[in-house]
Image 1 (tube, rainbow, N blue to C red):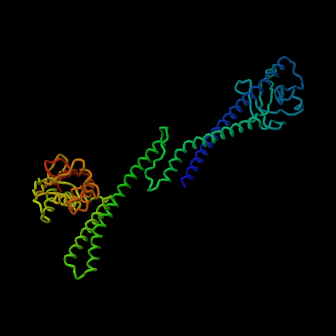
Image 2 (image 1 turned 90 degrees about the vertical axis):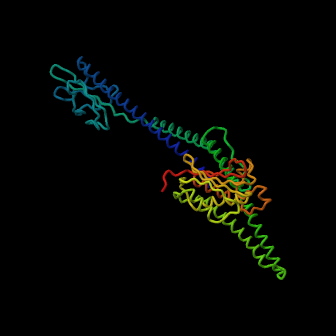
Image 3 (image 1 turned 90 degrees about the horizontal axis):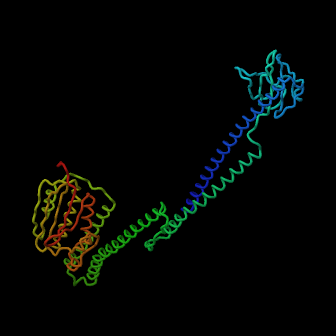
Length: 448
C-alpha cells in the first residue's frame, strides 16, 4: 500500500511538472504567434501604403498607365475625381472600385481590412491614398492579403519544441522525484521489517540536511521511545506475573496439601493463610487497575481542598503502628481530586510505616505558589542513587525484599503518577535520618 502511494505521488508530481511545462510552452508559443502576427499586420499595412505612394508619384508626373503592375500588392486601382476607375492592375481592369472609404481628417492615407474587397476574394488589407490634382483629389487603392498566424511549418516547429520541452521536464521531474523519494522508500522498507523482537533496528539517515533527514531522525527517536516503552512493558509484565504467581502458587500448595491430608490440617489456620494470599492478590490487582486508569490519562476531578484537613482525615482513618507526628499548617489550599490525593497520601504512609523504626512525621506547609506535603520516617532511608528507582513499577530495594515488607511494589509508582496528573512532583529529598518524601502541588489562589 505504501509503495503504491509512493508511486502515485511520483506520478502525480511528474504529471504536474509536465502540465506546468506544457502550459508555459503554450503560453510562450501563443505570445510568439501573436507577436509575429502583429508584426506581419504592420508590415502588410506599410507595404500597401508604399504601393499607393508609388502610384501617386506616377499620377503627379503624368506617367500613369491604364494597366498597372502591382509590386508587393495583390491589387491596385486609381479613381479620378468622379470616382471612376481610370487605371488598375490587370485582374481589376473593367471592374468597379474595390473600396469606397477615403482618408479623413486631413490625412493623406487610410488603411482598412476588408473581407472581401469588391470584386476580390478573401480578406485583404486595403490602403487608400489621396492623389491631389488641379481638378480635385483622385484616390489610389492598393490591397494585400491579410496575413495569417504563421505558416504550417512555423506552427509545427513551435508545437514540436513545446512537446520536446514538456517531455524533458516530465522526465527530469520523474527522475528528481524518484531520487528524492529513494530515502523515504528505504525508511519505509526498514520500518516494515521492524518487529517486536527487532526493536533495536533503526532507519538509515540521509547525508543531506533536509526534511527527509529530519523525518529519519524523528522516526529513529520514535523507535527509541518505542523500544524503551516496550522494555518497560516487558519488565512490568514480568514483575506483575511474578507478583501474581507467587501468592497463587503458595495458596495452591496449601490447598493441595490440605486435600491430601485433611485430618492433619489446622483448617482455620490454613484458611487464614489462604485469605492472606487472596488479600495480597487483591492488592496487586487493585494497584494494577489504578495504574491502568492513570495510564489512560483519565483527568482528575479538581476540587478546592484544604490540604491540612485532607491529611488529618487520612491520618484519623485508622491507627498506625508507628507514632505519627503532625506539623500541619492551615490555610494551604490546592485544586485536587480528593480521592486520588488521599490514595497518594495513604501510599506514602504505608511505605513509611513499613520502613519506620518508631516514628513518622507528616508536614504540610505553604511556599510561594506551591503547597508542600512531606512524609518522613526514621528508618534506614534510601540511597541517593536509588531515589528514582523506587518510583518504578514493582521496584523494591534489596533491603525491602529481605524484610518482606508486604508491599505490592506499585504504591510509589501510583503516588508519583497521581502527583504528575495534578501538575505536581513527588521526590525523595535529603534528611538527617530516614526517607523524606516531598510532594509539591500548585497552590490555589482562592479558598472556595
